[in-house]
View 1: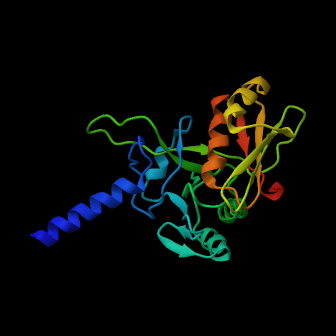
View 2 (view 1 turned 90 degrees about the vertical axis):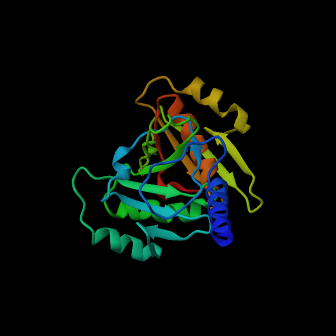
View 3 (view 1 turned 180 degrees about the vertical axis):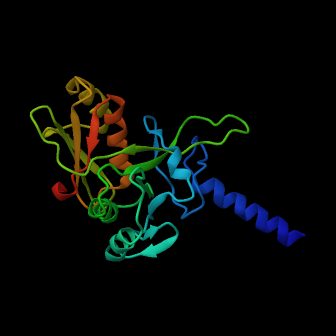
Length: 229
């Protein structure tokens, strides 16, 4: 009985420490466990919980999984190509907040090579779940091609081995606390695009934070993978 109690407590401890504080628990189908980043402006993605949902997981240490199966970057692309999808089926990427952009790019490149134009980056939410109600997955869809035009807004994030990230918007350096204000000043219509570029050391948590604030303005967002820093 003592052994059973110890195991139960250990499981509860692992579950509680794996999720961001004040965040809801996702109803996402069983798969690879990651500490998902928290956002406020993601959209419902109920199809991500379907049994046949196509999901790539990126762990904090850079491992890639297609569903629950580990894959190399090359193997991931081949595996996706060998699994035909429906015309209405999308790709969902479940990345750990501490994963580096260098590893997220491998998932994005596989998405692009498999014909997915708007893969979805899944996130957790701050909102509390209603008692007894399932919490549907949410995420942010991102374009993978450059949408550069005269109205585009370019946000660049440069990370370092120490974990700190610097931020520029249209080549103007600014603190993270000013990003929301700067985006709102520049976004004037929903057809505008906020294009994010990052170097390999950037954490996914920083990338999705910028994406989340861009979506708060109503703008479309893109991560052109061939334009990474």
